[in-house]
Each structure stands twice: as C-alpha cells, then as structure tokens.
Image (cartoon, rainbow, N blue to C red; front, side, top):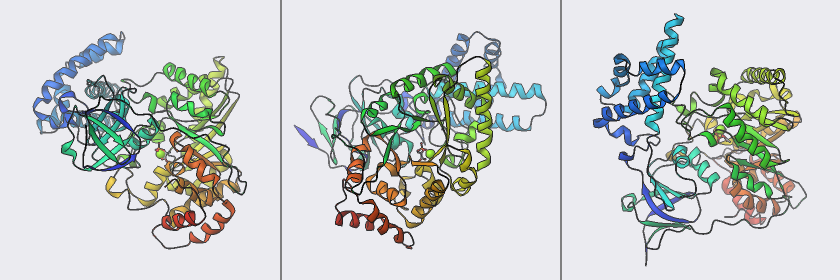
Length: 552
Ligand code: PEP
Ligand code: MG
C-alpha cells in the first residue's frame, strides 16, 4: 500500500529514486552549511573538544617528523587550549570558537614582525586547523541500504561524504538552484528536492519514493528505480546548418562515460576540487597526479579543460577550513587563494604537468577579477614547467591556457588579455550573481533576477563579440548552457560552444535540432534593447510558434 504525502515540493534537480529516509542528527556530528548540529550543542562542547584533541594527538603521532613532535607538545599548551575554547565560554559553538581562534592567530601573524614568533603562530594555526578537520570529520553511520538524505541546508560536502552508491536522493528545506550543492546533485544525477510545506511529516527510517512531482511514502523495500535514460542522439546541427560544439562539465571519473556519445567533443569544465573535497587532508601532489592520469587515460584523445582548484565560497573542503567570512561568495575563494598560497597551486600544476606528459593539457583559471591576476599565475606555471624540465620529466606536448569569465570586472578587462590566452569560458553562475549583486546561494532571491534579462544578455553578447574579434574560442560552462531556453538565448547571442552537465545533453541537442538559428538571431537582437525585466516569456512564445523543442 502506498501512502501519498501531500507535501509541497520543488525539484531543484528532478529524477526518480527510492530509499530509506536518513535524517542527519546532531549526535552524529554531521555538519552542514549554516547552523551545524555541533553548533547547537554548546553544553557538551568541552567533551567534544577533549575527544577531538585526543584524536588529533593520535593523528599527529602517526607522522614521524620534527614538526609532529612540536605539534604534539603544543596540544598540551594551556593558553592554546583556552584560546580555542574562548568562544565556547561566550556561549558560541565549538566550531565557531575554533574558527574564531584561527582568525585571531591569523590577525596576530599579520602584525608579527619577529620571525621566530611568526613561525610559532603559524604552527599554532596548523594545529588549530587540524582540530577543526577532526571536528568536521566526526563520521556518520550511514544506512547500508539505498537512502535519501533528509537535511535542512545541504552543502556539497554532505553529498560527497555519503557513500556514493547508496545515496539516491536529497530532500532539503532550503537550497538554491545556483548553489554548488544543486550543481553537484545534477552532476551526480541524484534528485534534489526542496520541501516547502510538510517537513515535519518526513520521518527517519520510512521508505520514500521520489518520482515526477511527488514525494510519497512507501512500504515497499527500498529499491532504486531505473535512472533516466538518454535517447539516441545525432550531431548537434541546427535546422539551418550551424554546427554547435558540445562539451561536458565533469568532476568525477564516471562522468567521462558520457564522452562515448559521438558528438561530445571533450570536457569543457573539469571541476578538479570535487574529487578531493571530502578528504581529511589536502591531496598530495602524487594523489592528484594519479587521479589526473586516470582522467587523461579515460578521456583518450578528447580534450579536457582542467579548472584549477576552485575552493572557498560555498565549497569549503574539510581539509581547508576558512575563517568565517561575512560574504563568503565575495570572499577568499578560488584563484585568490592560489595567489596567496602559491604552494597549493604549484602542487596542482606539477601534478597536471606530470599526468599530462606527452599529451595536450588545457588549464582553466577560474574567478579572475582583473587581468593583472592572470600573469603571476602564468609565471608560476612557467616556473613549474622549467622545474619539470630540469628534473628530466617530459612535459605535455602542448599547454593551452584558458580563463573563466565569472566576475564583471574581468569581463570588462577581457579584451586586454585576449591575446595572451588560448580559450575562455563564461561561468554564468558566478557572473550572474556578481552582475546583479545577488547571492547565488540565497533561495529567496533565486527568482528575483533572471539570466534572460536584456541587460545580462547584452553583457554576454559583449563578451562573445570580444572573443570573436580576437579569434578566441569561447564557451559557456555555467548552468545556462544546460537549460534549453537559456542555451537557446546563448546561441542567439553568437555563442557556438556549450559545456553542459551530462544529464542536459539530450534536451540541449533536441533544442538545437529544432532551431533555425539565423531567424532566431534576427528576432533576438532587437529585444536586447528592451527595458523589460526578462525576455523569458518572449523566448517561450517564439519557441512555441517556431516549434523549437525546449523540453517543457
Ligand atoms: C560558474 O560560476 O558558472 C561556474 C561554472 O563555476 P562554479 O559553478 O563551479 O562556480
Ligand atoms: Mg564559478
């Protein structure tokens, strides 16, 4: 007997699945974005602190080095311990308390001129970060059957931490369409649902079926339904003969299975941070090399644009706990971290150069804000290439350098560096939020502005025109390229290369097959001058009249 719940739900990523509901509880120590279970447990913060101190000591003791000796001694330092617990004394959560302790250490380091004490402060900072890592990694006992995660505000890490083959869906209370959690759910092809009303009805341990636009309780045993299938596809040519280049966005080895579709040209965006996101420690150069070598091998002759680690914002790996920021998406993220901490970047570049020896290596630099940030990165790349040569390691046969256009100031500056790059890709997810000054993570604002507004589209057209004038390959790898109506607008603006999530391939190809591009361009161009909020309804009407398949 199936009992259909009258829940009001919204699909952030549709799909079908069934599994047992698994609610993430405070006692299990799972942390999510925003208020974490640990943050609500001020009472036993001290106990948890003792526990993580013990675990940290055990972890440090495993490493036999001089610095481990020093760190171990430091874990007993009473003033360090009280500085880590200062926030708890003030009634804050343990996590916040340690994060504030780290921020304090950083502030002191900035002011410290004496090199000896500066070094000491850095060691304390390393130790504090280790404590935070251990706190974050308190493990959860997941069910051993397919399960659906019930979590108020899921973060990418919540999805990545769960066993991949058993996590079949996520039911949440609050998640924005533009968030990395949503992008990741799409990438992993697991349905992500937001419950608007009836959250309290969802009880842990019940079997739930997510299907169509319903979430229903079921007494049947948990069993994953057949995943969405992809139709047979043919070359992406419009009705009037324009060939569109289609690439994939990928993050995991299994995403490369989709390269077997004959018309997919390669990986337009490989999010390198994802595979290492839920590790306890920063991935070593060798771990990274092994992973990238597997990706190269699986991709065969298809090009892969490796985007260098794009952490920070809503992507905070457990091994890199950031100090709390007021506006994390406007904060210390991505290439800004790479420029300040070049060692992280150097290790990744070294791993990519070694994995790509004898092959073509495409490197994509994200979140550049001004052209001047690009050149120090190039210098670092060249230094690493020279180092590899001196060590007698073979280099890739060619290295192509690409930039992501995600910040309006960089789009404005794009023409000044176009000659120095090989390719570019527009990250519309970030570009949109910075253009409108609207947080991509805030579900309450996700409908307020539209990517199909005439001003945003005119801005995108400007970028596309600059690339064409400079004979540079330009793609779009943000989510706009994965939604038929938005991808239609991109083609109308002159973009000819799209990099989509694997699940979007079929609908995007159907849209392309049903489109007369020349007539659509003639229709769209004058609309860009309108003062309207959005052109979405115009495009829908045009598509209906001209039988363009938007899959709606
Ligand atoms: C983007 O911002 O559009 C993009 C592709 O990068 P990410 O979504 O990973 O920030
Ligand atoms: Mg981005």
